[in-house]
Amino acid sequence: MQPFPHHYTIDASVLPAGDAPLSAEGIGVIESAPPREFGGPGNRWSPEALLTAAVVDCFILNFRGIAQLSRFEWISLKARTKGTVDRVDGKMRFTHFDTQAELVLPEGADAERARHLLHKAETTCPISNSLSCRGQLTINISFRAKSV
Picture 1 (cartoon, rainbow, N blue to C red):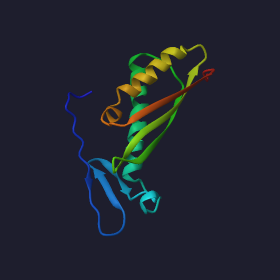
Picture 2 (cartoon, rainbow, N blue to C red):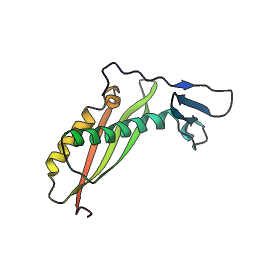
Picture 3 (tube, rainbow, N blue to C red):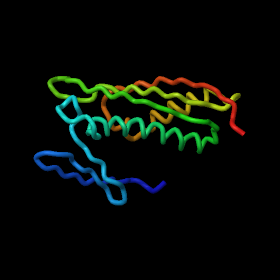
């Protein structure tokens, strides 16, 4: 890992109509538009979807890194995060993010250690730690024999 601080620069532009391309050096363009809930087409990434994606992406990538550093063996992790926007004190804002994590472990693995690492991945995520809304993590762990 590189020393702190880290900097991320994104370029954006928009015309009176159409998508808003988002880009960064060395990364492909993402076409952005308002979500259906705000009158948009509903077929593009929106700021709301991108923030929710950042929460779940940070969680799963954190877990992968923490598990690797902890030498913890696992098979797969699927996660789904639902972000909720509501009106609070007259302002629209995210009020909470609910994440459901489904972790598959090899038979005989330590489920309690897995839960600990999943919670650590959640609490060390710089995206979630930068938000003022509540978060909830629901964990489902299953076991499967390792493929040979």
